Structure formats: C-alpha cells, structure tokens
Length: 449
Image (tube, rainbow, N blue to C red; front, top):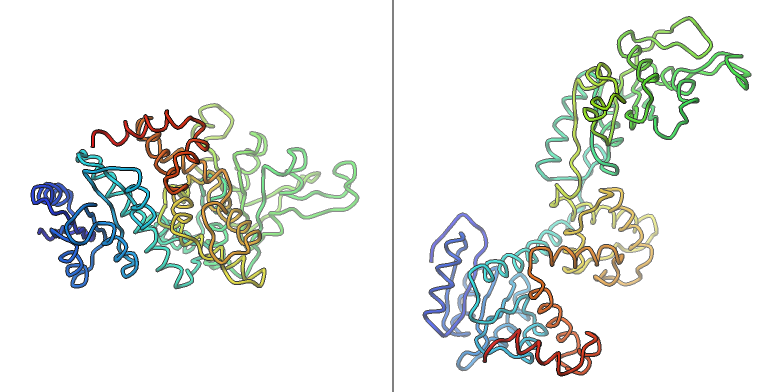
C-alpha cells in the first residue's frame, strides 16, 4: 500500500488475488491510497481500523457476499461510498446492488478508463455530500454581502479591499447576475466615503433622451415639462460614490459627457451653460467586452482607459463550483427565515444536480431557484424531482456528453430496471420497446456470462 498526498483511501475487496493486484496497481498509479482484502470479514476489520472513502467489492465471495458487505457498510458507515464489480452479471444482481446502496456497478472485464471514471464519479458524490454536511452545519458569512470561499472569490475580496483604500475609478466586469452592484457597494462602504451617498444608476434602463437629465440634472425651462430645476444623480452623490451599471449601453454622445466629468470633475445641468464642481467617485460595470465594442466603434477608447484604472472581474458561478453549496445554504436559510419556516435539507443527489448545473444566470438565478424551492416545497428534504425540470434535464445532458450512445443507453436501461425492481414488463413499457427487444439489449449489455 502506497501512502500518497491524495486524501482518498480506497478498499478493494475480491477473492481473486490477480484482480486485487491489478486494481491496486492501477488506483495507486492515480495517487489513491489503496487497501486490499480477500474477503468481507477482512474488509470489515480494515474499515473499523482506518478511514475508508470508497469500497470496491466483488459480488460473489465465499461466506459473506458483496451484497451483504454493501448492506453492512450502508448501515454502519454513512461516510463511505461503495462500488460493485462482478464477473457474473445479471439484471437481478445489478438491481439488488443499486437498491442496497452501490453507487456504481461494473462488469468484468472492464477497462482501466472505465474503472477510473467510475471511481471519480463515486468519489465526487462523496465530496459533494461531505461539503454539504460541513457547510450546512455552519451558516456561511457574507463578506461585503458576497458569499464565497473559492480562490477566485478570495481574489475578488482582495481587490475590493485595495480599491476601497484609494479614490481611483473602478471598472467591474462580469456576466449578468454575478453581483457587480454588490461589489460596487462593498467598495463604497469600505472606503472613506462610506458615510456619504451611494447612488446606483442602471444606464441601460433609462431612455437615452432622459439619461443626461437624470445624470446631470436640469434647470427650469430646459425642455417641455421642466417646470422646476432638479439635481441629477451626480449632484446627489456629491461627496460619495456613483455606480454606473452597464455603462456599455450608453451612446457615444453620452460617453463624451461622462468623459468630461471624469477629466474635469464638473457637470453641466441640461439647459445651463455653467458647470458645477462635484466630488464624486465613479464606479462602472459592464457585462460586455468593452475592447470588442471599441473595435466596433461603439465605445470610446479614451473613456475606457479613464474607467479602467482598477479592474475587478467577477467570475461566473460555473467557474467557482465550490461556492455553490455555500450559496445554496445561505439562500435556503435566508428565504426560510423570511417565511418563518425551517430551512429545508437537500439530498445528496439534489446537491449534485445543483452543483453540476451551468447556472447561466449566475448567483441571481441560483437565488431564484432556491427561493422557489423554499416556498413551494413542504417536505423537510428536497429531492431531485423537486428541482425545476431545466436543471434535471441539464444534468442528464451533461452526464452523457463524454460517453458513447451505447453507454448512455445501457445506463438508462439499467436505471429503469432498478426503478421497477427488475420487472421486465414494466421496464419494457417505460422504455417503449417490447420484451424481446429489451432482453436482446440486456444480453448485449451484460456480455457473455
């Protein structure tokens, strides 16, 4: 047994010495810590004396079978995953193995790649469950109103702190829903301007013909309907911070006026020829590629360099996968508290689907999903069927992207059979094929006995 830097320890149980040695050698080469046992009794002694992350057990062994070993592990060691391997495949044994608690079922002979893939999938489920248990035991804290412990988010927090210590203009980039306004607020409320106004402006939500008046104000009579003088957002933010959200949506004419504010620290109200000094820190954000817009002549290059003194790029949620469980917990607790009900728990499979989803809407989408689940689910445990169909179907698509059509079909058939406890007639009905066709497919899947 080789001790490596990798945390995962695997126990391989098989009464065939040659099989034990081959699997041990292959897994050790991948950096796993590997124990071996030739029977179930020996395996139980190892599990009792050393932490084991995964047990890979043969089905047919003398005295105590692999099924009995799986059952013992499931009843006594929740923090250990199990895989079944067998040289005597049958639908009945596959169904029993899955029902008893095996995460994977491999038929001998299997390739090294099939073994490695099955081990990685099984351990990934274990990691998700452990992370969920650890994080759900302690309420995550929100740094600057942002949730995250990943390295990418720690880098964001570091840049926020540095930006807050200066008065430089900051450009915040990131996809929609990543939390650009939260970052802007964090910079403001951590800076020396924290006691003054923070004024957010969604540039894309204000019609172009009104944006200048909204930003800079107007004097009485400047245009039809201007019955009195009114200060703009820049005057309101005097002494504090203005946040120009989605600045890429402004016209070239407006960009020129914003450039003048950045250069001269002055604004000119609509209808007035006299500029007014303002002491405003400018933070801007965009979900677009500004350099690409510059090349298309729809964004001013000089404004870009004025804005881009400090850049904070917020990673999309799919690139900080480890933060998803934290965000699920935080959101579930927050929305449950608002409703005056206990926060629900999430099953291992539900957490895996949520973690593997690509989240195109980022944190905003995740919060919406969790809020819907908290509101609509009355059960204590949220399972995969409770999740929105888009997430479930996305998980199915992702699971099949790196596999052949035959592999996907074989897994689906086995899952359907397991769901109906091996009933061929019911499985045929669900699959939309006759019993003869199903039996032929099963014979092909199982190979020669």
